[in-house]
Image 1 (cartoon, helix red, strand yellow):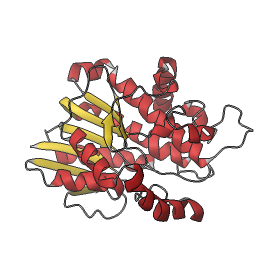
Image 2: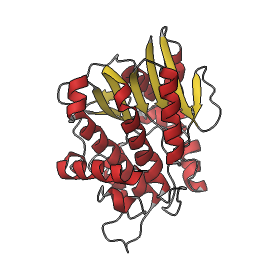
Image 3: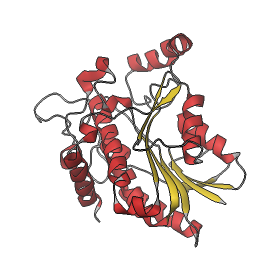
Image 4: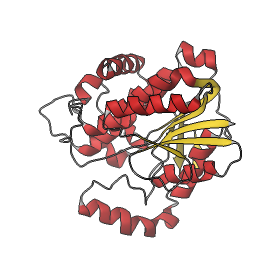
Length: 295
């Protein structure tokens, strides 16, 4: 029996992946959800905006595992706002806390239960790389300093105007750096982990923009579905299929590659951004994130 633990399975590509995984024989799917899941699987309460909830979820997963282990850990949930004014109950900027910090804590808590050869999939975004999306370079990440990001300081100059889109892109940079840090760790090498930072690409129809302005919602809901077939924009079904196949270990990872990116409905393995390849930033993010989640 293969066991997969997953966040972000109530909508979008996460829901599509969970529905596909659930149909595979001899697979047990454990979902962390804040609300009710439509997927026939074992669902456990999880609010990523509360680190106490992350700890409770991890403890519940361990109890359900008994003496078993985790064959795939899929850290997929994400959120985006128009600004950086929201704070979690722990006092952290919400986009950073949900997209990075909560998943970092969940990873650290469940690492000892990962099976030999387990897959760890962290959903990221091409917005972390200004060269990949020149039109969004104005919202590209400037740093990955966890201590600053936890307080909403997404600009190197704290007095400069910030934005929710930059906070989102920066949290996705943190996802890639976390994946790199895990993959390069002695633990990952000893366990033979397959670590993937997966960018599903621009995908209309997900709930990622649910907190955005009316104008942004109109573009996503009305214009994107029209343009999608013409421009081969990625689909929920396609992204969900890739996410499920990563979790089910159906995709062979190219040697030395960790960043998987869906471009025009095709899976590619490009280099991540220059910031994502910064080893000093990677080490500092891991260390400072540990400090932030410490009880």
